[in-house]
Length: 445
Ligand SMILES: [Zn+2]
Ligand SMILES: [Zn+2]
Image 1 (cartoon, rainbow, N blue to C red):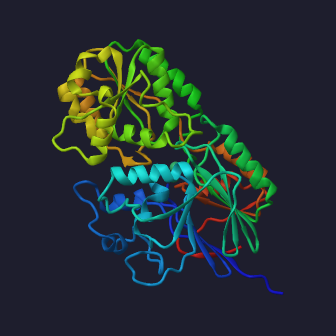
Image 2: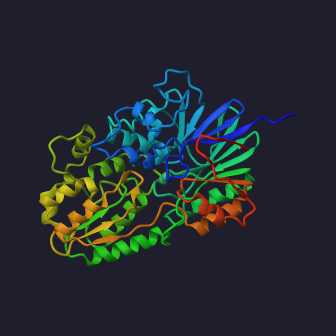
Image 3: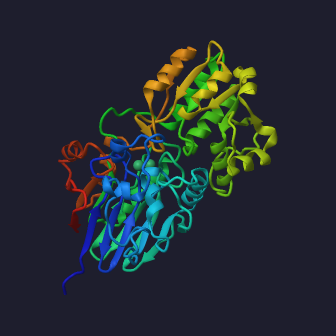
């Protein structure tokens, strides 16, 4: 009997970091793994908020949103996709859910569902991130999900956002493993080790693996980050300003502990507070409570407040501080700021001995692009030295190689990288065949 065909098609994540959209076809079943926004392609044409895409038509015209029939809510055709699985809540893996037909079920971890819904509320009316009406179906590790002829086993992994998963996809032609984004040096490295072990046992025919970090790798861990933060905060004589991805709960915990150890409060942004409040629904997650003594909520001076902002201010009235209060209590606060908040420095007037801690990746964290030139000008203006304390959300090359050797699949498809060829050479002594995928081309297993 002729075996049914199983194919992989990569509509994003090829020669770029992020934008993953991987179609697995097995007999009549069609399932996407991730449906992210491509920062790299979008950056070629847009610079939000001043130059932003006006509609999905623009995004398709410029090739930022791939042309695929039966997927998007605006194409008027019947749905041709059975399900979408989202590995984690970063925009480069999830944002373009915005455009998909609402009848397509979207499977993701429970934590990811909370994060995406909270972000949806914060970014309301954002063309490129709208999850309203999405039919989320959440899972936890240990559950398998059946979609048509496919069986999908999600297994948790360690990454710079909680609720991240890799997948083992059982097809008619053997198991396919998708790593999503992962690392083993964060706060939960053992989760990644469990994933690798499960993947090995499945004896996969193919692994679709991230290979983000191939150049300028630094070896560190979240533990090191916390120690370094503690060291800086301990010496600072004025305000400590901190920039980090607000979905990075590990980093939030590290800053929170560094604050407590040095008798400071951590003043989080309203959007961070909104997300923290939503995440309290996840009992297994280790995250500081807004009611904690050491947490304050920073309210920017601005005219209009969104309803989600008002909700937090009404719920935690004693926690709210404004620029004037921060200015008076500089030695007692670590203030989280994003590049959008630099204008607040005019009111705060950081004292001598204050500093700025940049604690996310370059050149973008997975939520925004960072404009360094302007940042440096602000820091120069206020005499604020900049520290860079960070550990990547992505596995280091030697650890990646060891993991992939252990999984020992017949084929490896590197994605989420600008260095696929370097990766292929680096891996050339392994038994697995490295396939450098082309965008939009169908690969038979
Ligand atoms: Zn990513
Ligand atoms: Zn990620």
